[in-house]
Image (cartoon, rainbow, N blue to C red; front, side, top):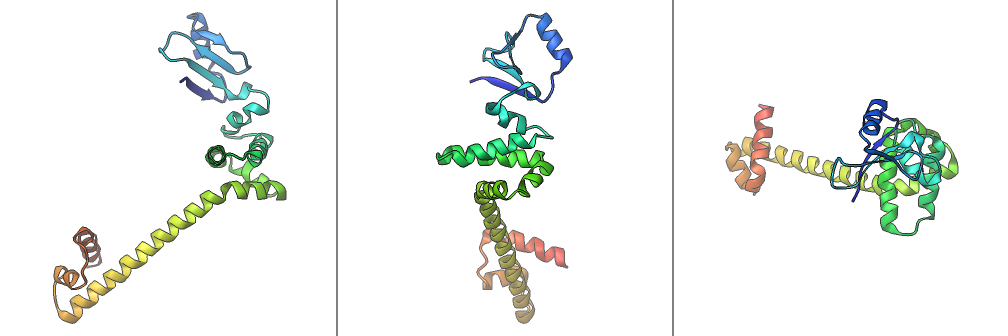
Length: 186
């Protein structure tokens, strides 16, 4: 395990202090620096703005204002990937990238081939969110229907909220919710 800190740009003061203390070692790749003596675990600072090459596209794309070619590189990489676990990791990565780079994602979305690839990648996420929203709406509708039924039973039988819920077999675990809703409506 390695502790990694990712930054878009170098903190000059921090690097100056680490160099002065002899704790900073430049890594094999441009933009990767190892810090000695802070922890028992290996510790590195990755400056995404200094990373070069397609293999670092994901790191660069996670920063705000990501370059369109880096995001496209990730989409192309995931299209080639056959392992479902790794594809899922790419989906999570693209979700994070899209949150930080709305404009870049919008410009990619406008390109037919990239848009199709992006939609394929995000299909599972979109389907999951639609399913969750449908479930929420279904629960809200059921709750509203039960609330209306409780009020109707109370009115027609002239009984208390608690007795109306007994008549309708509302589970004890849900009664507090309905009591709160009834109180709010008074």
